[in-house]
Image (cartoon, rainbow, N blue to C red; front, top):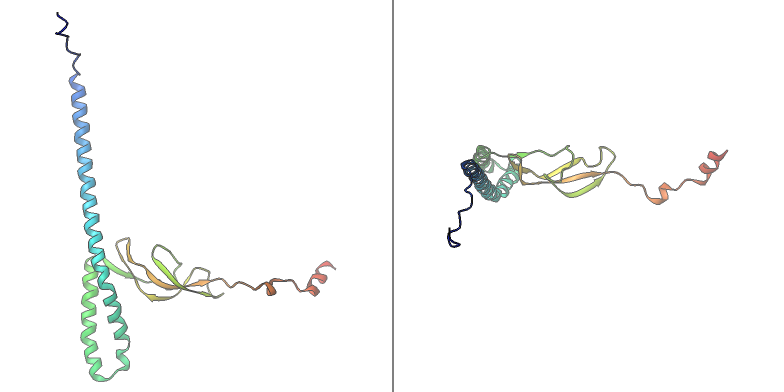
Length: 174
């Protein structure tokens, strides 16, 4: 053989080609699944964002209907129709997997609550939700809008109340 004709390198065994093929195939299938999952999450996020735009409208309906009982007969008749519309909105949200959640009396969770006020109290444990200003909504486990709440805070004593009375101090040493 001449120098120009070098013997070809030893060819890879067929098992190596087969292994590489199956690895590439598995990687492609995993990538396809990952992309489908990401696409579903993006679509769901877009739907949740669109639904979040309607939540303040639902809040306004609920607030307006609270005052309907104290209004005149004509307003009460209108309120019945508005209540029906509100029910349709809520049903449409529920059909899409979006539901409101109640926070009153629950422990504060920063993932699902927004504390807008704190109140010192000894009536319940610190971190308990005392009042709900606006409802929270979630889609599955994802919070679309956190509930706006008032949270209990432990009562803190002033420095003057924490100081030991000198008379009590002397009695302790006796």
